[in-house]
Length: 200
Image 1 (cartoon, rainbow, N blue to C red):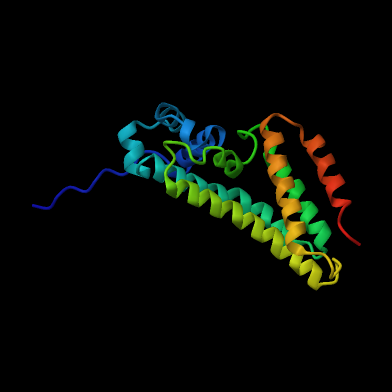
Image 2 (cartoon, one colour):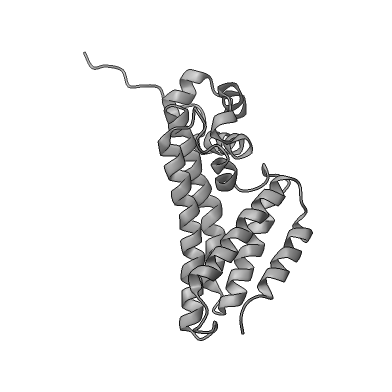
C-alpha cells in the first residue's frame, strides 16, 4: 500500500518569512523569541520548524531574503548611474530611505544583527553570514570607487580603500541613527556633507 502524501501547506511561505524577517530585523537573533516569531507568522511551533527548520535556519533564510529583496535593489543604483559620485550618492540616499521607512523595523537588518556578536546564544553560522553580508556591501562600494577612478572621475592619488572605509563608516552611522529614530531628512544632510569630500 502506498503511503499517503503529506498535506500541502495552507500558508504562503514567502509571507511567513517576511513576517519573521521583520521580527529578526527589529530584535536581532538573540532577542527574537519563539513566541514573537510564531505570533508574527501565525504559525505554530511545529509548523514553523517544519517549514523553515530551527531558529538558526529561519534567521539565515530571513537574511538571504533581506539581501535579495532590499540590498540588491539599492546596489543597482551603483551600476545604473555612469557618474561615480552620483552613483554612490544615489545608493546612500536610497539606502537611507529604507533605513527610515516607518513601515519597516528601522535601521539595517545586518547592522542590527551584528550587535549580537559574541552573544551566548548566537550560532557561529549566523555571525559568519552577517559578516559576509557586511563585507559584501563594502565590496560593492569599493568596486564602484575603483571604477570611478578608472574612469577618471576620482584622482589617481586617492586610495580607494581609505575612501571606502569612510563611506562604510557613514553607512554604519546612518543605520544606527535611523534605528534610534533619526529622520531621513537629517540623515540626508550627513550624506550631503560627506559627498562634499569627494575629491575633484
